[in-house]
Image 1 (cartoon, rainbow, N blue to C red):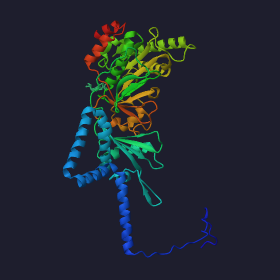
Image 2: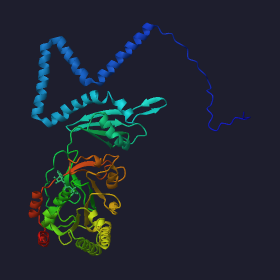
Image 3: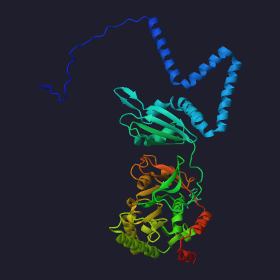
Image 4: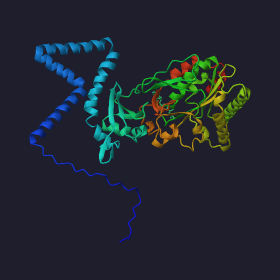
Length: 476
Ligand SMILES: Nc1ncnc2c1ncn2[C@@H]1O[C@H](COP(=O)(O)OP(=O)(O)OP(=O)(O)O)[C@@H](O)[C@H]1O
């Protein structure tokens, strides 16, 4: 036994006063009275909370009691006819202010609130503190044609990424197809969106071509929220990653289409590289100022030429401006490369491969300010296949084969934030995730699809002034 006890730590002071509460004997009738009063109070609270149910029900009871069942039937018919008339007259406002709010309340009552606490616990979003269990509070449910949107007040210690990770489990728990979480302007709230229908299920037709391309926002497809997806090419390079058949071609062609007005006027020059033998890009040859395919040495030569042009331009602009503005004399140079790995990894001649890598490294690191942009598609985003991944500020993730590839393409934690590229079904080519400026969570988009006929007609309408050499070469 120790002689002296030493316990490190703060000593809890002895309470200055000890109070012993007296025991009360409560008669049984008073207890029953108390329970009844409590039940009544809860009923009133429920009636106020669900006023949209209790008010019409109370009114219906009153009409029935005062005027009889026939009058009640007449009132119900008139209200139904009014709703029908509203729907026929102006369906958009009826759906927005009438139907969807009603469906949202019913779904909150029937689907979400009854299972809320248990789902929070099983999905790991509830917590225990001091012996008490706490669950996040469901604040609001909104519905539209595509799905439900839940606004939730998070528990202290939670961040939107926690909800992003749990979103898929939440979707399954509430028997929905997919779920995604996004942050809001308020740091204590998160919005979880469950989809019943896919707004991107249909093929997106080619978008209109502007005479002068807006390099700050080239329209390439549609976003999940129905807005057009616009890509900022100014000051950027674009990497498109997707498994075979994911629809990389549709992204490349949507981009070329969005630049076509500039190609015709001479403000944009597209140099196309198709190392897979010209299969993907040959249909649009009239649009290209240069078209290189098949021969690695030839492609290396065209890339060297691009580097030379970039350097000349840089020396001309040095001290004049910090950002190139395209003109007919100094057009924007856009290098479009289908299957970049075929240039950087799969070429067997090491000398040519190193030459290509060197040129690409220079173009990617120095081209943006002088109006030289690289748009490259790629099947396998692993580092050993593409050493320059980090030099592409804009990245697009289409369907990928493994979850780990998502973060490689879209950046750290992109998958946790909802970019489920590996879950995009093979039946949805052209669907992918992008990161928008200033938006934390990746956004799902579908790119416009151009058929071979669309591409040929684009080539005929917006042909580049000096395309004949390419055409002869491509048809030879
Ligand atoms: N945006 C789209 N909308 C609808 N269908 C599309 C879209 N993009 C592609 N497809 C369909 O998917 C098929 C494969 O597309 P695409 O050839 O562009 O894939 P890819 O990713 O380039 O494949 P690979 O790497 O094998 O060349 C196309 O033939 C077309 O039928």
